[in-house]
Length: 239
Image (cartoon, rainbow, N blue to C red; front, side):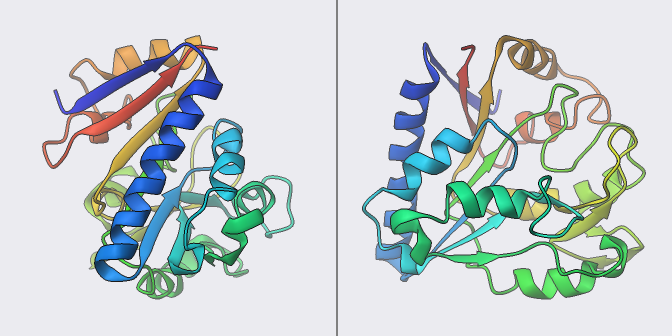
């Protein structure tokens, strides 16, 4: 077992506790190396966490933020994770932080992999903290079940050239319309602290299935639950 499970009665309690831990992670790196890096996930689940973090007393000017994955849409598109982060996290005190975008306006994420990988070189690796989410199909970041690019993303190579090591990988999921740019498994694991933030009874059931040994292609979150590099801290609430 390579996880620690933290259960909370309410989302509000979870958000407070997780925000405390994240601020501690960031502050430790600011003190130790003068910079901190935070990798976050999109979707509706982290919105209260983002809003809580945005007002925390921290030297945000020393924090760089990027996403675990991004839909290949313009930053003003309603489906853009960058737009969500801008509305809910890059506000208040956190407005002083520096954001690294995984989208660059090219026609396809497959043609943008090298450019985004170069952009990610500016991020202060290893990350201070990575916050993963999980879909009801067991995907995390844009590591989707059945995707043709899943193995490249797990290994850490570019989808169109498996000989090129990369921190990002373009993805065409089978079950959702937009192409994606995702951080690879090695990039997401290049962190001092790893978290999984889950809300709702249905996702709890999926998590319980993924905690059982089985194929990563069935539930890609297994790549993080069953690795031996470091424990993943699971923050779970059913409300």
